[in-house]
Length: 420
Image 1: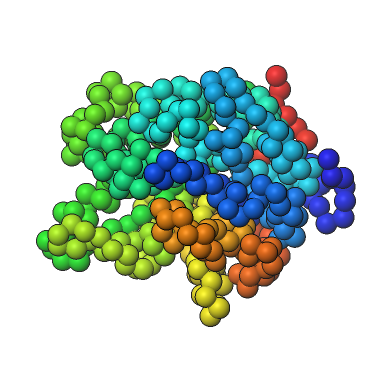
Image 2: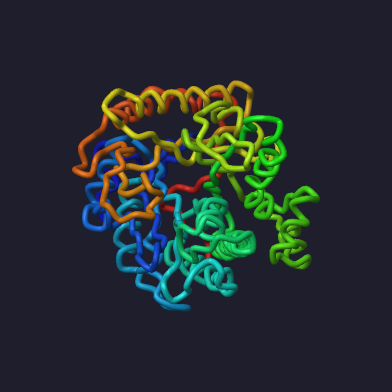
């Protein structure tokens, strides 16, 4: 294990107040039976030590990170922890808090897909096994972007089960959320002070005309569905009828309503320039650009759930004209606006550390095209936005914790594991 006292590394007993973060992109859905592994595509599987050094160079104390689920989880009660053992030990050794990202858009082949009704129960077992293997890990995102995963897998026909139906969407949604809830409960059995940072896409739909307004209103209700179920928040009557019409039983919905885990949660939301949509008269949608912006949209989410906030994903394609750096500062300005309103904002994330591959087609096409959205390129050279993010962290890290509204997270030092 690296020397935790080495120069430039935070001491393991130093608990930061504000979460400056980045992430290692670990999406792994299947498309037409082909596994799309972003950790492999970015060569992180072989260059993880270099990547962790870059995280330290940025002075990011938090990293959204997970073991590749499809190669770690071999069967019910069967695991290969070799890669996770090495990488998580290295993060702990260098003083980086992992936000453990357990399921990111895909499941192992032996489970099949998100239509499998056994997935929530099985995933609960995996989450508990992970927590017992790494009892010092306190921060978790059990299931990443439940809404997006259900949408792309069950309604759009892009990933995994590749269904194009409302029943497929609702089934994927209820299994994803149930898996997330069961995983949270399992982790809390091992680590009672665990904190769960949801990473969910913050969406907004705008009506192009009065004709499109009903569809826009429906979609603006539906965007909350995964979080409503996850936090036990009542859905509106038309949404309840929709769920019952498409495969959710009254008993299942009642079970979601009984969920009482909000006190362990931080509302993490992801926002990109593509997260706002224009709804046309025929019900179709297209990207509208950032009409409202992050602060306005996340204010709606905060009003609904009343939870502390974290900006858990953003990026923009770098074309050489400074767009990504400008986007970074725009997102940071939105965060500061929330801060002044005031709202409890606990962290900010540029996602991801390195460039991604084939995200220009949402991973549906296997072209090997570099998607230049990282703080570093795939040669591990800094992009302008990476230099700007490092500067932002240096400038603000000593300022934000001093502000009265910055909540002191109940984090334990990395040296402290949960009591058995």
